[in-house]
Length: 484
Image 1: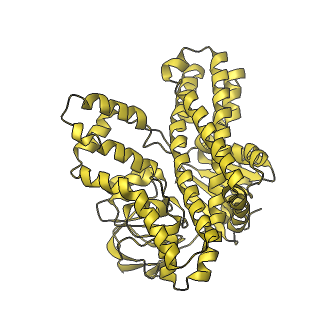
Image 2: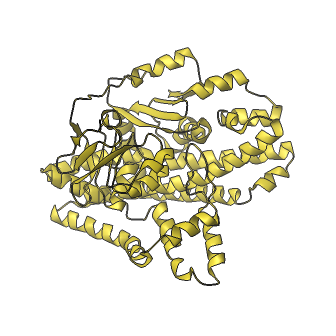
Image 3: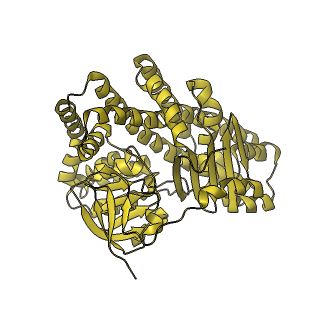
């Protein structure tokens, strides 16, 4: 059992529903170790109402991560195979999903619907199996690069700056990709061609605001509105287009300045690629979440089961419902909506609820904050343009982004892609959890704003509208004035 007193890797709590992460856990337990050699350590993944939290022993994650990184990222032959496997899995999944629509599913018999679902699930789990390798490798690669850099760079501020640049992805994120594509339509906004161009854009990026909690099919009107409010398209196109070359140039400067050897430079390059890879994977996940909803909505209508209830089924239970009309009792679904534990340990994957399972996670919930402290320490992952001051806005959910104003300090347990709107408004980002290659770290560097992660208690110590200073030279958040 994971020791609550050990160094923990914590992902969450964030908004989530079990069905959207179920395939990830199945791949961890079965396909990934079979295909890519190494296993994940023990995992507790629990859902309390609308929130989900992933917990594992960080030392065990790093140990397994080192094996993944050295085997699959640093070995040229294995790296080539891994990329080919990923591209093949992503392409097959995307091609299969291109045939799926509400109308198509509605036209199928129960047997054919079952067959289509079964084939899609296999493709999606195969995609997850290979897509999990870079995620695991990141934890090992980050540690390996840190150890090597610390031997070369003594000053902590210089180290943070060097690591920030070396680990930055050289490719643009999928959010930057969409933004760039949309900005390029600005010059056509008042032409006859625009209607067709914006329609194609919405077809390509309709999934952009999807998450592990809910799916939002964006329509043309959304993208039209975003583009109509854009006043500086030319300069933004130039900035995003030039982003990869700027990152490469900054990395070259760091390598030359600290005379890094070829092995260290290669580790940095492979780590940054792996970080980009993990972001690319999220694009496919959010696309696939749309198709999960299409399946569930069709099954909901056929079986007269509430759509939300189906989000608490396990994939094998969805299949059994379709094939044998085997339903989960209303009482069980009610319990799952309150609490569910997904426990992976020694090749065994359990999905259950109940008093015993609640007892397993209790030790991880007993966190207390020091309300008297005016200094919160964390890890600097983006220096931005220097220290900033601003009012705190605590977002325990991206559904609360409306309370964010331009220039506020975004404080969250962690960030995920569905936080992006709030992150773009923030003057700085502070999170309870995360590391050098976390989502908050990557996005804050893209936005060129300060970011401090791994504070443990920021969301519990701070309150909305507290005035704070985010000091990246010292790695602290200082409370200047508390909101009464």
